[in-house]
Amino acid sequence: MLQRVVDRVTLVSDQILVVGSPYQPGFPADSKIEYREDLYPGKGPLGGIYTGLFASKSDYNLVVACDLPFLNVGLLRYLIKLSPGFDAVVPRVGKVQPLHAVYSKACLDVMKVHVEDDRVKITWFLDDVKVRYIEEAECQDLDPGLLSFFNVNSRADLARANTLIEENASLGNKDKL
Image (cartoon, rainbow, N blue to C red; front, side, top):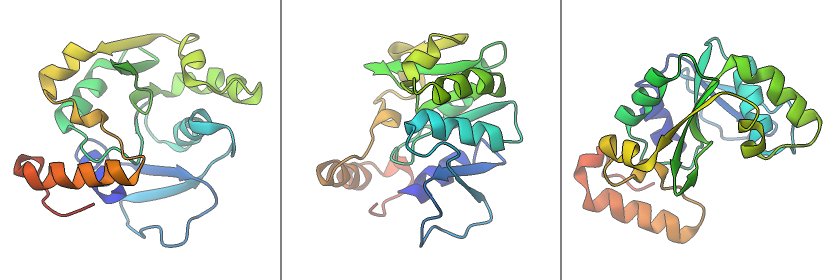
């Protein structure tokens, strides 16, 4: 599944960072991927986003979860295109989708304060920065089925993802996850 995410993100970014707990045995040794140990372990996704932004070479950074097997490259490019002038560009599809978003390095200081104060809920952080929200209808223009936001959190989700891959050759990969 991680390889599917990397394959899509590689189409829109020159630097691929994966943030996680201490180095994971079996992590793909791929020259396209740089692994970074979370600078704030136990502080949730906000700590991970901080780590990635801190290590990144870019001012604007696409942040996606590793369990999103159907990322839409057109939608990712759209988020990136909208990012100048904002600290974050975040879709709202059913709810705020902070792990399918673009963040500016300008967020680092605010993120650090939130993480160190143990205020790690991403929506609390978003209240303190300049955000451009992308509403569901706007996302559907580029991703009609909103499959970009389908995440795999259980065996049932994984089975559904594999079924979607088998049923929809237009997703570009018939292999199972």
